[in-house]
Picture (cartoon, rainbow, N blue to C red):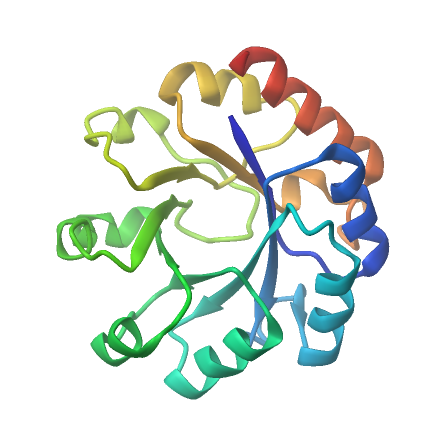
Length: 203
């Protein structure tokens, strides 16, 4: 079971991920509506702190090609795209894409399932980053493929084991579920617990 911790905003949080040997680290870029949005300088600091074995993911919403090219130059390994994914980006990007779906646009999956540059799909709640779950059973009929199936949306240390039992995704993805009680920054203890509980059930 692979693990993705999303919404990093500091090098201290990057160190928590290094300690847990997680697989993916997500950073929100070019989306100022999010409290987790970071600029290029902060992204560079975090990337330089993260272990080289951790895949760095830029999390975006309907990005422009110019923004995608900036993300490539910063050294990200993947770009995660919510909202619109333009053909120009698919044709011109040099890094793999993770296409994210919310409950409301999941019917667009067929439009992207055979695109080679898309290496995985993130299945998120209707409001990404809200900490709310959705009915995992709705994904039980999705065919397994060679592309990563990443489950997000309201996961936390308490429910991640059950989510894995229900869906057996390739990767579990958490952001708000491992934040401090005040909603600011990530909790080292919650990250440790999330990783422990996810790996325990997936062994």
